Image (cartoon, rainbow over all chains, first blue to last red; front, side):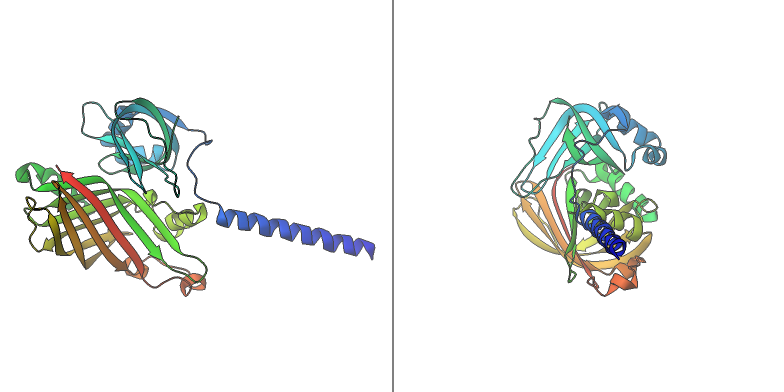
Length: 138
Length: 179
């Protein structure tokens, strides 16, 4: 009889743990890539050139991946709800566009135009720029 | 794919209409759908927007993986189960607008936009009112439309279908500068 109670109690603990884990996963908030290891390091001009030469191939290599991109900031845009910097690709009018998460009442501390920086972010693909989201300055 | 070629062609036509072409690389598209449990919303702040005032043409393009949701799991479901962004990575719009806009005179100019929205490899004609606000040489474009996921062959499982709004509200905002 006692064994049965122990089994029921263990089952209850197990079910609670599974439910708790599922609840955590369901509600896990969107975060930036701080603490996520980058799978590649590349400079902005190299990344832009890779996309201009072969967008499909570059997508296979970079989309969805966290990468570190080195470059010089050519524009900074900060509003109440958006934060973006573009890393110039020398010799082109293209760039690597880096989008930062903006929380309620908190804005990321962005480097100024002209700064040489390394930005880590998750690549989403190519429009006129190569786009990264969830960025952080390394 | 044809719509994307038209979009690119519009970009390359920039030289022929200098002074009439406005663009933004950081336009925003936000969408919102209410459910009894919680609201589903996301925003993309890297939308490429192009407005040709002379030809009264308007286009925008966005990467679907660029939509940021408050919850990671929602974003994963959106990309993998609904819009299938690995197969169809971009949403594009190309169209024309009626109504006149004087870029030399600050003011708000309501226009009617009509064009083709491509999403999930489905092209659909949409018509919507928009506002082009000229201020200090820039154009702030705002538009709102309602979209039914089923119109773009985005299938929502029946077990959750009745819990999600039939139409998704979409807002477009872009502060465009001369190209």
